[in-house]
Image (cartoon, rainbow, N blue to C red; front, side, top):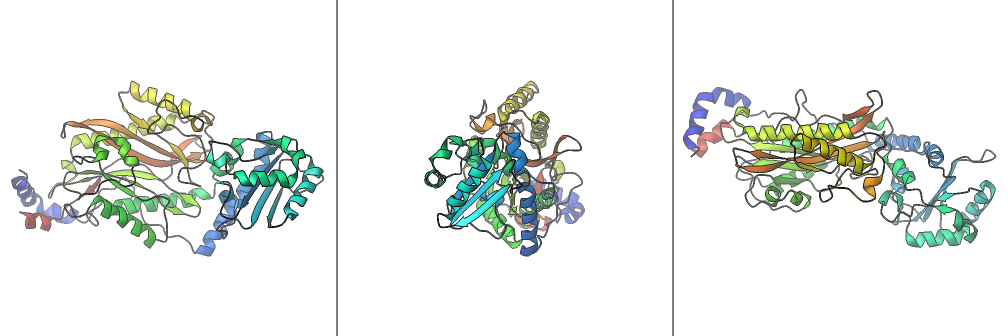
Amino acid sequence: MRGPAILLAYLVNSVTSLTEVSAYVGTAPGKTPQFQALPSLREQADLVDGWTEERKALIPGLLRKYGIDAWLMSQRKYAEDTVFWALKEATQFSARRRTTHLFLADPLNGAPSSYSWIENTDAVWTDLRQILAAQQPRSIALNTHPEIAFAGGLHAGELDAVIRGVGEEWKDRFVLEPMLGVEVIATMVKGRLPWYRKMMETAWAIIEEGFSEKTIVPGKSTSWDIEWWMRERIQSLNYTTWFQPSVFILTGSGFPAAEDPSAMDDPRAPDRPIVYGDLIHTDFGVTALGLNTDTQHIGYVLYPGETEADVPKGFVDGLKKVNRLQDIVKSNMKIGMTGNEILKAALKQAHSEGIEGKIYCHATGEWGHSAGTVIGMTNLQDEVPVLGDLPLLKNTFYSIELFAEHFVPERNRTIVFPQEEDVYWDDESNSWEWVYGRQEQLLLIRTPAEDTLSEL
C-alpha cells in the first residue's frame, strides 16, 4: 500500500514538491539541452552544397589510396546508386534521365578529374568512350558489391547499359573496390560537426520534454501517445526523422521488451498506459541538413510525492553499468581495426569486469545506419559477416549502441539498460568524443503535488 506513504511525503515535503514540480532532472550533469532552430531552406542548401563540394574534392585522393584509376557511376531517375545521395546538389530530389559520373585519380594532359552527364540519348556513351580512350585507365571501379549497400548501388539493368554503352573492350577493366563508396559516404567534413551537435542537442531536448510531466500523465499517456507526440514535435521544429520514434516500457509485465531485449527492434511495440514505477526507454533521431542522429535514453516514472532520492538504487546502478560498457566500447574503437576485432576486444573486457549485455554499434550521419564497419548486431555477437570485416575509419560519426543487463533487487529481476549516443573522431585528442554528451542520470517524470491530493 503506497497511499499513507504518499500522503506523508506530501505533508513533509509540500514546499519542495511545489518548487520542483515543473522541473525535471537532465540526462547529463551541467547540460540543459535547448531546441536549435534551423536556418532558412536557402541557407541550408548553401551549407549542404559546400560540404558536398569538400567531399567531392577528396575523391581523387581516395582513388589513389585504393589503387583505382577511374570510378564510374550511372543511374536512372528513381533508381539511384546509393552514393548518388552523397554527391547530389541540395536542390536535387532524384537523379534525372540518366545521370552519370566519372572520376579520375590522375587525369592526363590537364583534363578534369570529374565529369557528369544528365542525358537521355547515346551522347553520354560517346563522350565516355572518348574520355576513356584518351585517359586509358587500367581499372574502372563500379559499385557492384553483393552485400554492402554503399558499394553495391549500381542496378543490374544499368550495368548492362554501361557495358553496351562503353563497349566490351572496357569490360575487362571493370573492378570492385567497396571502400570507395564506403569512405566517400562515411567521411564527415569538419564543417558538419557544429550543426550535427546542434541537431543532437535538439534530439536531447525533445526526449527530455517527452519524458517529463509536461507530456506524460501517468495512467493515461500510453507509449504510442508519446511516440506520436515526438513525431509531431519534430515536425513543429521543421526537422524530420529517418525512423518512427519508439517508446518501450522496460519493466512492463508481459511487455516483450521487458522479457526479450530483441523486441526493441520491433517498430510496433505493444501499447499500454505508462504508470508509476515504470522504467521507460526511447529510440529517437532527427534529420536535417543531410544528417541523421540516433539516440536512446531512459526515464523513470516517480510515484506521487517522490523525488530523485526515491529512485530505486538498482535503476541508478544499471545506468552506471551501461555507462561503463559505453566507455569500454569507445576505448576499444581503434582506427584501422575491423568491427569484428573491436567487438571481440570490447566483449572480452566487459566480461572480465562482470558486465553482460550486447554491443551493436554502427556508423551514422549521412544515413541513420551509415557507411562503415559494424560492431556487432543484436543477433550477431561473435562476428558480423562482411560488414564487420571492414576497417574502422576516422573522420566519421558513430552510434555507440548497446545494452547492459543488471539485476535490480527492488524488482527481483534482471533488466536491460539500453543506451545509444553518437560520437565523432577528434584529431586533436586522437580519440572518439561524444557529439553532445551521454545520459548519466535518469530522466524523471514527476507528479504534481496537487495531483497527489486529488488521487487520495
